[in-house]
Length: 315
Ligand SMILES: [Zn+2]
Image (cartoon, rainbow, N blue to C red):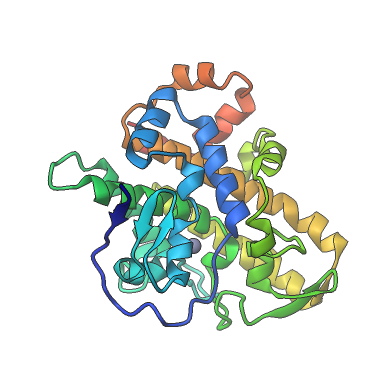
């Protein structure tokens, strides 16, 4: 029997949706990286809850924003009306002139309608063992968490220059007309999200498997991984991507070679952080089991995981 996921809000869905965040390929890659790091017990808990993999549900939260009628996604039936209030949960539009990032709640719409707060809220739902949290609510929360952990690592989901997070910045990339936000959603490739949606994420994930440079996650200024990721995204967009756009709006191979390592690092960080969040949620984090389950990981990768997953959050 199909399952119907319900969320609390029933606000109108038909307002403009400026972006999808990472396209389908990016979200599947984040989910696959996370899944590769999960302990066996947590992977089993995920499958019990979802009836499938993290990758299966990784794009449902975006797809439901573009639907008008209930539709199937990864074995669930999603009702767009039930998810209408979730649109602001995909980003935090920090004004580009902001110099103090220490209080993310103050930068969050209504203090709660942004990706940082949504990650906290969905994590809290999943951690709540009380019987008043239904299985459907937990399924919905996990579906959202998998997706939003990817979104918060997309640089243009944490900044705004009065341009809809880069959507109003037009450009050409290898001759293809795009905008800045779209280019990054498309992982700095010519192919757009529709074409990328048909691709297998496995080759991309294998290319991301190299151990993450621990310095890429430092300094660790926030206790919460969502806040940390949002601050990093803001700085990447402000200090690297917007200045490059100011220099040229006709982008080419050199731009791709400069920016794709950043894309890869963000997808990897998102996957590792998602894995850690899930281990923490399911209270099954076990370093020894993690190591034995993933023997190819080396000391550098373990240090990276430690740096991007604050020790204070470990169970
Ligand atoms: Zn999204």
